[in-house]
Image (cartoon, rainbow, N blue to C red; front, side, top):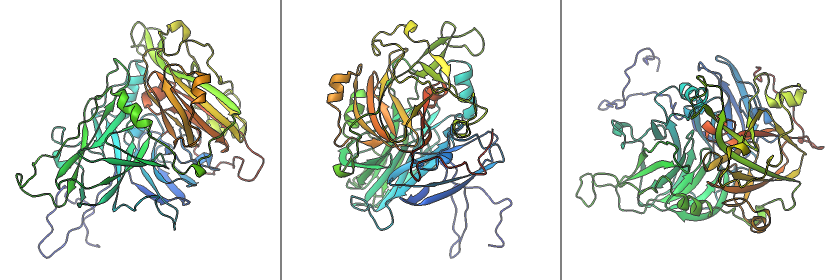
Amino acid sequence: TASFNLVDPPQRNTIDVPVGGWAVIRFIADNPGPTLEVRDSDSLVIKVTNSARYNVTIHWHGVQQRGTPWADGPEYVTQCPIQPGGTYTYRFTIQNQDGTLWWHAHSKWLRATVFGALIIYPKLGTSYPFQTPKLEIPILLGEWWNKDPIDVLRQATFTGAGPAVSDAFTINGQPGDLYRCSSQDTVKFFVESGDIIHLRIINAALNQQLFFMVADHILTVVGADAAYTKPFTTRTLMLGPGQTTNVLLTADQTPGRYYMAARAYASAQNVPFDNTTASAVLEYISTPCKPNQGFPSMPMLPLLPAYNDTATVTAFLAKFRSPATSNVKVPAGIDENLFFIVGLGLVNCNPGPQCQGPNNTRFAASMNNVSFVFPTQASLLQAYYQGIPGVFTTDFPAVPPIEFDYTGNVSRALWQPIFGTKLYKVKYGAKVQIVLQDTAISTTEAHPVHLHGYQFYIVGQGFGNFDPTQDTANFNLIDPPNRNTVVVPVGGWAAIRFVADNPGVWLMHCHIDAHLTWGFAMAFIVENGAGEFQSIEPPPEDLPQC
Ligand code: C2O
């Protein structure tokens, strides 16, 4: 080891191990970033050093952060950014969560390259509620631009036009051999016939919902967003950005090579999207070496649904159920009955470089006609905790300012968002219901809406306008799925419930970064309770300052 060459060793992707000898290689697993493997109940201490040239924060997507709101990570919400050269130590505990989560930069569009898996195994001494798999494979679906993500963001926001379409999707950092010149680096997973494999799939893409399939193999869904589900089988998965899904796959096909592939589900009409397919290869170790020994030389490609196949998405999402009903604690009564309309649209602007939408407009997004503006002088949590005035207001509307036919032919006059940093305050322990209603303001579109600090129950979803009487009567209060990100159907609605028992300031937003940037966000203040662990602790000493 003392004689290792750490100065100018050769860089290769293949190494010849000398006959009767040895070789040592080193590499940085940088895209995606390191996988964190922990158990439920573990406490994590993660020191983040910013060696990039941009400000950055890290968010632990889906971790509830009970009692540790200062470790949540969204920039200007629970902390100011870590500046280049700076450090911040995130300290938190995993509490009653099993499955797959992930971590990502929560600053600008840096999560395009700064992300990784956070795998949570069952608590020490406990096991899965299903057969222990032979292999655990995290699958991170990413979205890649050849340009610096900050330039892509600038183009999307500062011109007021739509974002540039990405150059590729990736599976564990590689686009796969359906792209030119990519076959050498295609990600391969080797399995033996009969193996049961646990795939932990994460949609880390910035702006695209994704279908995922493995050729010829049936997938058994066993979990999503760090909660188990009642097992069900499917050939096709669909994940909104932010969502995770755990599936079991049995290697029960003819030994050979099979593609796993991901491609966009683009629900909106006339919106350009990345139409490429990312792939990786599942290879049976016993695959015959030569073609014609009963197997073709090319891997089998799965037949992915069409990019606009909403019927497949709807049928798939309708299958999710929480497992044992005894553990399901859906709030029955409601203290806070909230109705949020969400959507994208064009706002008028003064002709200029920031106004490149059609007819002197630029894109904006809103919730209840408020287009969210992030503060810059302090984080929201800091402002709330220390009582710094002028950073936010608490007048976020509980219902839309005007009622209209949300999914009908919407006139622009009904939708002129105001810009503001508006928060909504709820009491500790309040039972909250939120109906998220998509609108047809510029176009209808499915939106993956993520709530920080909580897992919620998805008690209902449907198309068209939400009907409070009829749709409420059909809510599933028995075994609804428990998630941290809900896909609001295109031209439809989704209803979620949770108990606000985690004090702090918690962002809720569309996990499509283009929409978040345009203002599709709001935040909740959950007030302190009276008992132990029911109030916000003082901030850690190394909390970055603005
Ligand atoms: Cu995964 Cu606010 O995000």
